[in-house]
Image (cartoon, rainbow, N blue to C red; front, side, top):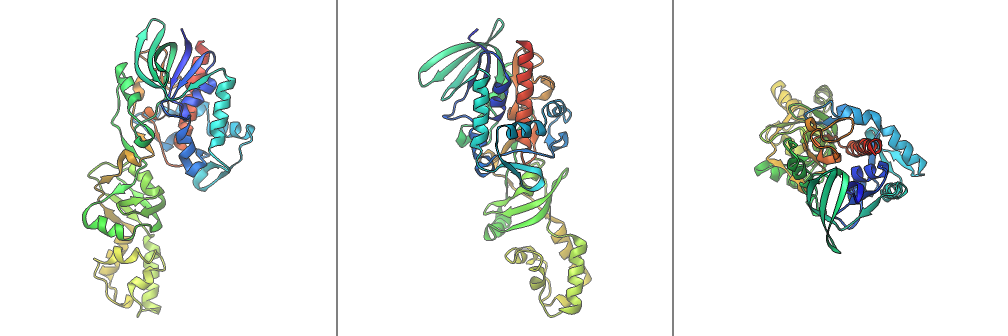
Length: 396
C-alpha cells in the first residue's frame, strides 16, 4: 500500500483527522489551499467552537448519534489545544468563541499537527474515482502533474456538503457513500436567509438593512436572537437558525415584542399621551423604518387614545405573533451548512466507520449531523475527525 490512510478533503474535519492518524497519511484537497472554510468563517476570525455544545444543538434523523463523539472529544478539549498553541480567543454572545487575531492561526495549528504526525497535504488534486481492492482502496487522481493512482488501507471522506458552490463545494461525499451502499437522508440548505415574493418582498426590500431583536419560530423550533431585513427577505441569526427547521409551504412566526410589555406601553400612552400617533409610540420600541411596514394594514386611528380593544388585540398579535409565508430560501449559494447527508444508521457512532465497509469513514458535514449557528458545526468537525483518527490509530 502507498498509504495507511487517505483523507478526501482538507477542511476542518479532514485536517483534524489527519492530525490524529498515525503512519503514512495523505490528505487530498481539490482547492489551492487547505482550510478555506475555516479561513473565511466568522469574518476571518473563525467561530471555532461554542462553550455550550451539547447533543441538543444538532439536527439529525438519529439525535443520539452525536453523543459519543461529542463526549469523547469535547469543546473543552479543543479549547485546551488552542490555548496550548498560544492562540488568543474571546467569547462573543451565547458562548461563541472566536480567534482574537485570525482564523489562519487555527489553520497553521492544524497544518503543523499534520506534519508532526508524519502526514502530508496534496493540493489542487481531485479524486476521479475510488475502487475497492483487497485490504483497501485505489484512488485515481487528477492533479496539475497529470493523472495517477494510489492505494490505501483506510479511506476517510471529509469533503463537506453542498453549500458555497463558488468555493468548489460538491456532493461528491454523498455520491461516494451511495457507491458503497450507504443511504442518504434528505438534504437541503440550512442556516440560510429566507426569501419572499410579491408584496411582502417589496415591503422587505424597502426596509433592507433594518435589524431588530426578535424570536423566529417554525413548527418545531424557536430562536430568540436578531433578524435582518434584506432586499429579498429575512436574514440574521434567528432567521438563519430557524431555516434549518423550516419546510417549504410552512409559515414562520416573528415575535418582535413581548405582548404584555406592548399592552402596558400602549395603555400608558393612551392615558398620558393620547394625542400622539400609534406610529410615534411604537418607534420607541422598534426601528422607525420598520413600524409603518408592520402596521399599515391594521387601520389604526390617528391618535393613540382612540385605539380600541379590538385594534389593540390586532396590534399585539401582529407584533408578538406575526405570521409570514416564505417563498423559499436563498439555497446553497449563501447557506452555511447542508442539513442531512450520509445516513448515520450506516455508520458507527464510536468510530465513524461504515458498518458495511471496513476502513471507510465519513466525518464532518457530509454526515447527517448539522449544528446550530455559533461554532457548533466546527465542534462536530473536530469531534468526528478526532474519533475517526483515533479509530485508525487503534487499528494500525
